[in-house]
Amino acid sequence: MPYKGSKNAIARDIIDILPAGDVFVDLFAGGCAVTHAAILSRKYKRIIMNDINDYPKFFLECIAGKHTLEIHKEWISREMFYALKDKDNYIKYCWSFGNNGRDYLYGKNIEEYKRALHYLIVLRDAGPMQRAVPGLFNADDLQVICDTEEINERTRAYKKLLNGLYLAGAVNRKNNHYYYNGDENIDMLQGTDNTEKCNISDVETLERLQTFERLQSLQSLQSLQSLQSDYRDVKIPPGAVIYCDIPYKGTACDSYNGFDHDNFYEWAAKQKNIFVSEYYMPDSWNRVKTFTKQVNCTSKGSYSASIEGLFTNDPDFYCEEQLTFLIG
Image (tube, rainbow, N blue to C red):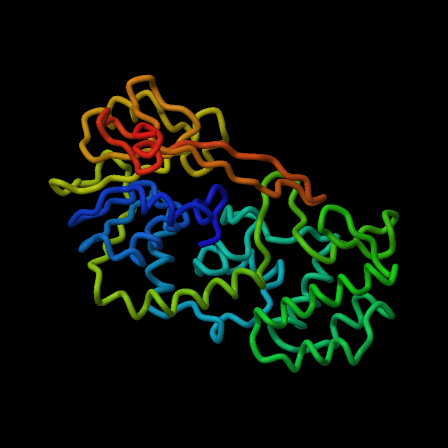
């Protein structure tokens, strides 16, 4: 699910490293990317996902077919968002800035354009786009996009059209983002209006909903339990593999504001088969894998490298990468 700090890019790698077992516990599930990968891996007979927010509940709703591309074609305006966000998890998380569940997804300066883009890609209606940026697009080119069947193909066709306009000198491009009418009136034609953390658009969110069709077919093969508790209140089954994507120390903890890392270290040290994602852990913990992710951080397309590790308190646990290194 869309989530700031999501492990979506490395979730499969994490699950590949973790040992198999009867029960997998995703204790800080967040956007449920690692739970998602655990389901698809079929390494576990039972999966428990937990978080203090209601993302796991939202994830179950998606698997159950409550949130699909056919159901959620509508454009959610700023007014609709604030009226419905506390009643609908889809609107709350998929249409909020940074997926924070509080603030509307788009800034007022690009809201009109994003609405036009939604109508073009999702509703296959080119009219709003022609009115939002008059004279920029050829009507026939937009109609070709509308006539394309699959939403991901329509997205590709639109990006190809933008690139063609860039090559023709009709739009500017900086760091893979396109701008209309130069720098004096910047209207971002691709990307997000986000100056803190990267965010995905509503179109990309709808594309992701398609992937849950696979999970619906796998649901009967797994026992999937959703909890909404403090990690210390979760009853860990004997022999379970525990994964913790805790709030990283020194960063904004968001819904985990006030998270006590020292208390967590003390609790985690007593657990078996536990693995933690963090930048750093106490010296007694064994780093079994380092991940480097490139993240698009700002509305102007700047990038930063995120280097994080996967740790365990088992000093004898080695992943295949380390064993290969030791053997030489």
